[in-house]
Image (cartoon, rainbow, N blue to C red):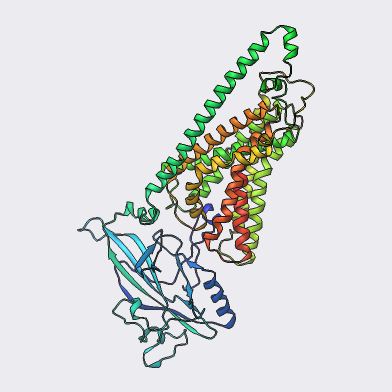
Length: 564
């Protein structure tokens, strides 16, 4: 447009997710049809042609917005050749010919806009749908006219490749526009208005459901699968614990009723009761770091719960771009007070003395790693001139929110935590730790940690697929009610698996259960990361190094948050 593109006013969440909205030179008026309107003409240099070919090869897309509605893409199915609409991800800038490998650019678009009239007697209309049908046309002027792309005379000259009173169709294309050095590319567009019965309040429904591309039964299958896993696991835990504990307690009571000389003969009895004086012994390895991880995990768990809950209610709609990221930041900052309280209470129970250091690490560890990773990627994207990089001012705002809100709240929570009385354990810890006998192969802690994550992952993997698709394929995710149920099921499953495995560790006289209870359910994150490696193939991403760094860097961060 004249004066260059102008940035639209956006919120913090939009910038952090890489959304930057700029104005365009397209002229569209309500209910005014346009036929083969000329937009501009560019002449590609050798460098520009090479860049364009690279962008087409890597699958770059245009993402347009009209009246806050993203553009759907009109394409053809590969198997049947029928027209198909895709409601997320925009439309490609061009395509590569499979045989010749030549790059072709989509230099003509049919802008199809659906409108709704609420009252037939009032000339008031609302846009309820927006689609773009891209085409590649090697335009030519009538009479062999050559336009330099600057004179106003060329804007009025008729084209031989499209009519001024009929909308363009694919069947009328005789030659596609190839991308090559010194080639002149003329950009044109049609505007097509269609009346629709869809009300303005329901215009986002088809975008969210992708025109029922994924049936709701799939999500119900996911929920049913998860519930069955939880029921089976709950019955298993109850049956094992009740039967074994009843048997163990009866045996210990019988042992207590024996005479002293008979007790001496049965002193070789083994089981969880023999470690009662060591079961609440603080972790021998990095007790402060354990408290930090538990505090950070509670903070993340509360954040995710409230974000999913508010999304399920409807406060965080995809129609409000950036609202989800803003909610994550706000809830994470506010829950810092809980993180500080939990870590300080636990550290005081462990009789730790370096409470200032524990609070500082709690406030800085995970958010510091996340911010450093985000800053590294943002700087790299900035030097690569990517639109996904967040402005410097927004990065400063995030840093200020962390330093001025989150960290003080963590210290405030730690202050209240240290003021509380220390947690009293039901048994007295002995002075000398009991020796741990060599475990059987199946009861080895490492084996238990690796096996524990399989069941929670199996309970949530179906919904995980849709979340991954939404996150990396720019699809709309809206079934947060299902997500809330799956999230609760995941927590319950992790708790049940952990209780069962910790019981078996205590039966094997292994009283070092603190870190085991942390890593056992946390191994779900390991299986999620392994799943993301295999899922990456379906992404069909470009082979740029930055693509791999972004995907696996952020997936590692997400899995680290899941571990906590």
